[in-house]
Image 1: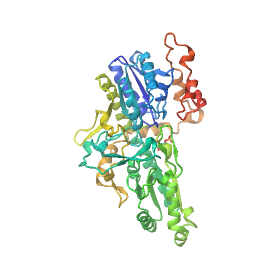
Image 2: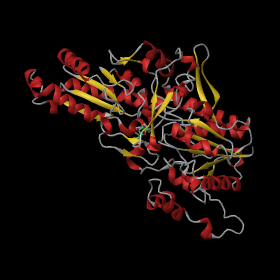
Image 3: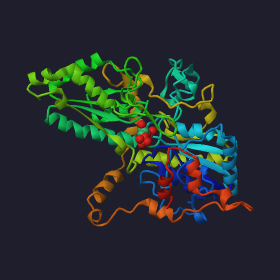
Image 4: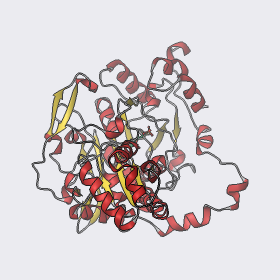
Length: 494
Ligand code: F6P
């Protein structure tokens, strides 16, 4: 292979540029050209395929910075529809005309589903990323444990149920132990929990802090490093009575309580607390809003004003119980050392997989108690259930103790290898040197997009193709309503 493409898809993470960096460094060594495709799968739907040559003369362009969060080539949640065969053929021919012989998609479970039909047209591999840590398998035969149930209201007419595990669990058998982006998200969330604690202590309040992760409780689990009093994860239905008892006990003892909840927590009927107002993103995922707020309302109702008045710690439950979302701060900014290091290795591994002739393969980060972490390749087909669908990984339920509402012993064993050395000295030094730099006050922010825009090139029309046939990005986006307005796309490209 002389030229490959790379794209970054789905929600951004702090480690995507590190993956691009790792891929380009390895490609330089192997004398392979790398084209960065702009804004994920969106670039493939665009007849002009906006792209950037990331390594002219086999040297990285200076905009590639593994310490910078987000993705320099942009991302989107555009979705590849396997039923649109003609469109997929068009994509393949566009890539062929660009001279791209293999494709790396940096993404999560949605991206891996999306690249399945592409892998039938050109060699394609996945380099994983997601703060949710939900791309992977807790044990190799996990896909066989999914059952599907007819449900006219669900996307595709079915919903899926995960049956109880039949495997003897072992950390070393996990497929893709951890995804780049997760460690930084936990770093930010745990720090947020610590900071909120002091307000809760000072003002005798109960804080409910919501973290991301969709239906996977891995981020909530990791937030244990910030020492909340209780953690709630989507994998275990909420036991409200037990929680309220524990909250009262703690409030009596220490005059404050801090609770972390994953955004996807469910009640004992399996209903998502945060999805009371349901919306979906372009890929059809339910956008969760407000699990913490929903829980606060339940507390207000169950604990009541009188409780706080008796303690002389506030006039009302509304005043005493507050919520905060860690929000997108957990998804952005500088990646910590663990994420940078392994994201780069996974990017390099993805290049190797392509060059070794693998297709529809995933670069994975494996764990061995003697060797530590190492990268490997895994056949994407083995991530699919028997209907061909790739599910987001849930947190392995036994990592959590529902009685203590904390990580279990095995959950602690899971977290330790990731976090014991996750922060580099340079991470702290960077903050010390840069945050209060005088230039931050005097100079406007210079966005990476400004520099990358100058490097964007387009696919030339094929011989004999008229401009009308090629279309413009605007025409094209008017036809594809991937949740983007044409106006937004024009602004984005210029
Ligand atoms: O999948 C990553 C993630 O950050 C989830 O944890 C979260 O639910 C979702 O994306 C938020 O998406 P958006 O940034 O599109 O609101």
